[in-house]
Length: 231
Image 1 (cartoon, rainbow, N blue to C red):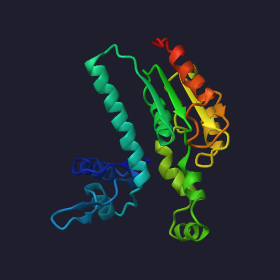
Image 2 (cartoon, rainbow, N blue to C red; image 1 turned 30 degrees about the horizontal axis):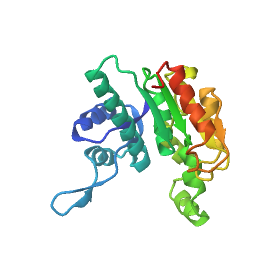
Image 3 (cartoon, one colour; image 1 turned 60 degrees about the vertical axis):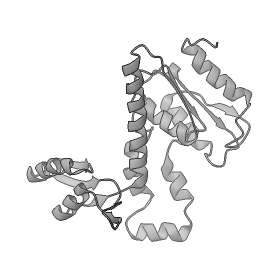
């Protein structure tokens, strides 16, 4: 079996060893980036990275991958804590910009939410990250094996477009600016197609949504369709 292994701490090393010993073709290992350690605070690779290198397995340490994985973990743990305090709690999620990305990613993994509103959301970081790099930088990275296709492979596992949403369409809502240059309109449109939900557009840029009637309408619709009282 060909697979990819993801792990960081020392207790994940035996699992990696077991898979390798069983003859599985491990195409790569994803682990957290090197971190300062010890009295000298020198960068040190994770236990999994060190073991993978010893086994001759390619190691990938994408910062963005682990940042989004951590964000998803944190959000789900907060929701679990709330439900632990009050099992009948009703929870809705609203996020703007990067928060919109995290909200839409949460919608792909958390089924028991009253609604999710993704505001001015990024849907796919690859064209934004790669597209904003100067050409000499893109050539530099491509010469070392990192191009947009590989970046897409690395970040696909934390993309809201990678999984079907766990919520029914009527609980999913999104708004975006038609003149946004930070999150271009094609980004919310991709999420709109994935969710099979329309975008509530407002005529403005990335930070001009405050007071826009369309934004208020989108959030009001989410709250009211969930049966929440406006008061």
